[in-house]
Length: 359
Image (cartoon, rainbow, N blue to C red; front, side, top):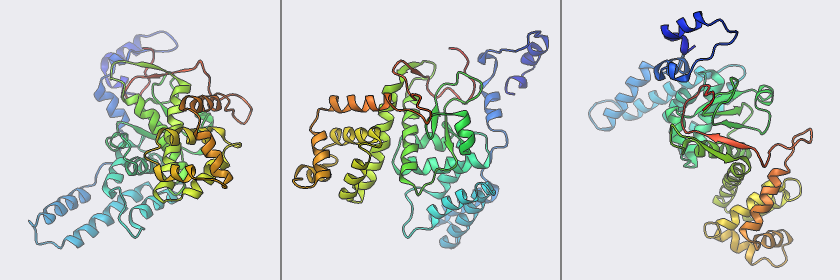
């Protein structure tokens, strides 16, 4: 679509006698790419734009308007804008966003207008599902002070929402996925694919988003115009550690030390990947988690804590070796290994949400 906005490319297509037409990305301008990406993209309404200006000047004392009244109008308008993403499929998702922003006793760490802007800018196809999942991804990233929060807000990183059945068919492995460089015509680059059953109320779901944002961060750190080949297992180790660290940080922030120990140990046999990721994170961040580590250190009769203490006494190299083995041995429902030691991923920076073709 982007290519056909240029007469030169139309002429090439008409003259081409082959079954398939291949065009160099150099023949498609950035403006034409962006035009296609932003077709039907929601923008800030004139009403909200005017209200935000009124609020700004009222806060400076330059109007005679009542500030509380203006703020109420802004909130009502933002809710109205978010509700444009309502549908039978996504009504509960929109309600979840609104409840997060306005339903608590204390103000949220993320501003309502930023969530709205993230929904508009980061939605991959500007569909209702993309918008609500972009809002959720932004909230998780912003609350955790993740560096990719600003990329979601600006729309550099796009969010594509898929119902679980479609996600399983298109993406296959994992519960969420980030695509760095598209080598097929099926998936888009610089795009975070999220199933629509992820909830802000679920700690594991939020941690899963952090996992994928870790992949995105590595990709965006590569200088545009260059590329980097990275071992898949190495990438997954870093992402799983970030995922588990998010969960540990949540328990630590609530001083739920006993519960955290229970959660970690409950995974030792059923999910060694989670367990050894946890041990690795704790080992590497002993100072940051001093209170929890001290609780483990003085354990004498608590068998749960003693087990964690024993495994934490191992070297980080030995712990990470067990973590690597857990990832390599990870299998899907059919018993097929999900990751390969020889598999490598291509990172090429913020190159755009389109088919890259060959380097």
